[in-house]
Length: 318
Ligand SMILES: [Zn+2]
Image 1: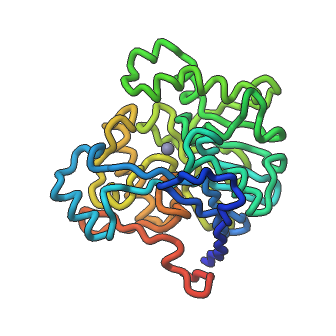
Image 2: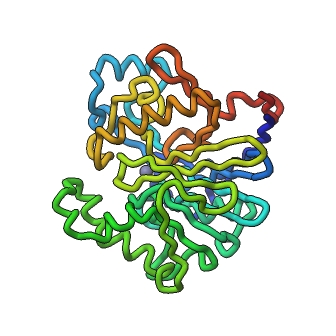
């Protein structure tokens, strides 16, 4: 299998970035191929925070050991990656980042899409892994669709959860509580123009892209399996949030991140086993840019090899 990569750093000085930015980064885009499809990781930016205050199911000694091994500090830089897939027929974007104006270090999806050579009008289909704010924030601005020609595909279980306000009682997280207003408002322009399509996990969305149930992080969290010419890429969304830590300790989790922590853990372990056994490339929203690589199991831990690390001379041959 041959995977071609092309990396570009976008010049952030042209992106109206506030001068007071102290954390985060803007890494532009990264292009690679999966069979006949061209896939591009598009960065929305990143957020830095102290993970030692938020991680559960891990001792501080174990965390320190993992951070040291990976030359990381507890102030963890979490990327927000989106994945753009160009098939022979369609241009498909998976997730849309936080949108402009939420944080100074995020909201660069459209700028980086342009840097990669695409305009929002060219996107034919939008696929959501789930409806948390860092995945739906770029869908629309003040009731106007950012991607005017795109059909929006959402797992019906996921949408129905956020539409049903009786579920508010189960949400302890303040950000998630706000989603019961925010999520319906972000999808409204697509609904109005009859471009909203609901699906059941397992359905094919477009030729070469199939949805897969990966619930736990949210009730209808969905992964997407991209397949072309026998090559496979699984876009796993938020099955993992803190790569270096959760690859080594799959039971570690971020406080308040998962709606159903037990299911999220089960999904994480099942997915990691599957992709490490069959050699499927994985892509995740919050892994280090470009968020793509291979997983293998070594005893009771998983080891992630980023796509970039395998590259010599920008072409990877397996
Ligand atoms: Zn997320």
